[in-house]
Image (cartoon, rainbow over all chains, first blue to last red):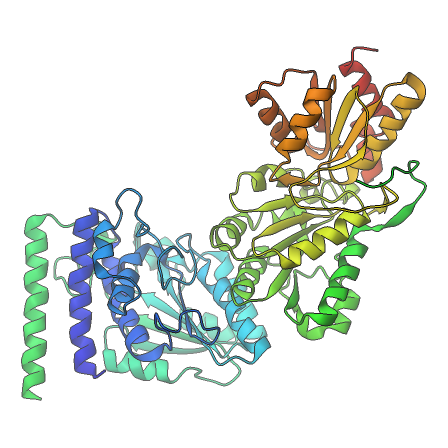
Length: 281
Length: 322
């Protein structure tokens, strides 16, 4: 898929995220919008995973540690054909499998997550199994920057380097905001790159909304043979909707009708611009 | 049920030795058997396993949350994982990982809590595991097992290796007697009758089954009181059928466990019995709600009456004969 097509897909995904959050009357809006370009590139470019090969032991694994932005994951999985998109109309409703965090009851979800600090240890174990069995699959996991203070992340970071898991790639959705405020003020984890490097990881920074840069970065995994890879993806919370961008209050929240109309207008406008640019190219 | 033997005539190994020996046997033919340890291969008796199968042991270091998360990841990729760590840390420090990564995600990890209960004796309250039944009983999709002798331990290991769901196995440190001379059947969720008698049932688990059996023999010898002794090796799912059958026959039920009297085997039995209309004298023996006294495991057992004399005395009180 071309970069232009992927860029348009991201805008479609953003619209769907907002639509289903409106439908569910709940959702982690800002974080879903900040990580959607990453998921887009992973599922439409990088990962060897599909509904057809999901039972194969050799499929690539994606584990979403920041489980609260499940809306982004569900929208992408539906687009990839793991389940009918109409299922998402039940999101958050009584008895639905499409709940506020990833669950294996939904086809395509690898692990039940949501409690923070769990994705990296799970990914380490899964990547270690691949090494033991000489299997070709890779494991990608998405962490939020706000979950980094959980000690289990650092325990797992040690283990990943100790076992030289170069089939593991952790991505930090570094939007720099968490529910209480800036991550630097809640519990400063900077410099993240130096910390992971000192643990034995190979680290790269990337613009988390630049499709081409994301593609190239993921293509480069492992960045160093024998080392786990960390991608620090610099993102904007609420990306794509002007009044949500970098606003903590949109960590979670449902737009009112007027706000929703404005968001859709902005995203439709972005879509028209993308199509216009594409036609010129 | 096997043929009953005279108490204590056969001495077996420590259950941990049986664990490591059985795991080694399984690993001979199954390369998917993996031991994951938290700097605990010595205390888990896994040193020779590690030497023999260096590709089947994963050292995590002292990091229990990570131990359980990594074990869940390995299990999700098809490995038969035994995650070994002192019971006190495994089930408290990594409780959320047990709940989410293992039980909720149904990753079939075999959690092995070593040196459980007050096995660490004089190391004190930080190292005593007197809460694990209580917290793990409250987690859905987890089989909770405390074997009472070498036979139960070996069977539990073998069945756990093949079970496609999470299991918690709880082992102590000391050598175990063999409870019956001939054993034919072990199944998770089915209590094992060690001795039969119509006056009182002593329902015990893990390392307290042996003193319960000794007490039953003392009651028989000195008071002509006939006791049923059950090794309730599986705390969850609890063998409700056996409990109901026994409750209809005997005059009283006494439960014994190396665990807080809160939330363990005794309360599990009590809630079943009361909810199902069985009204008979009932007593829970275990560690009271206090910071445990210092001493060896046996000294602590004796202090709290988890001994031949203590259990017999409690049984007599329950039967109002003393």
